[in-house]
Image (cartoon, rainbow, N blue to C red; front, side, top):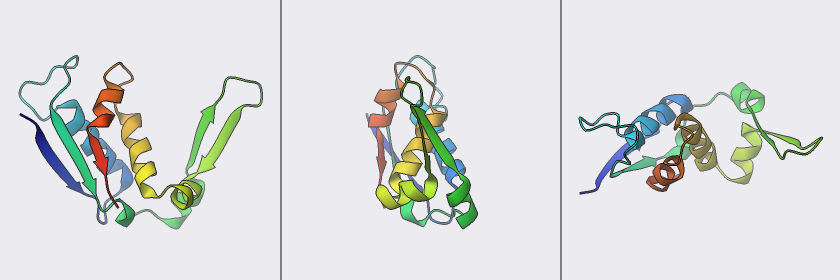
Length: 116
């Protein structure tokens, strides 16, 4: 039996939304919680475009990735991510970072739906 839980992101901080969604995706709110078992929970984050983020945070928050080659480090700010892909991508990155780095992470992220 699949349960759907909804989080309204209007006027909330990005980290608060991400931690709440990560806890729901992992199943930590359930009595039957086990770290190695995938829960049957779908999480929907609505109104991602209405998140409360200061302009200074948008300019100063930097996301990094590394290709593995010399000089292969890429940096992008939260402001650029919002321009290119919208706040949905920033919310997804934040939630992904709060999930455990194991075989279940990709499966948990498939149970996540983010809407503007």
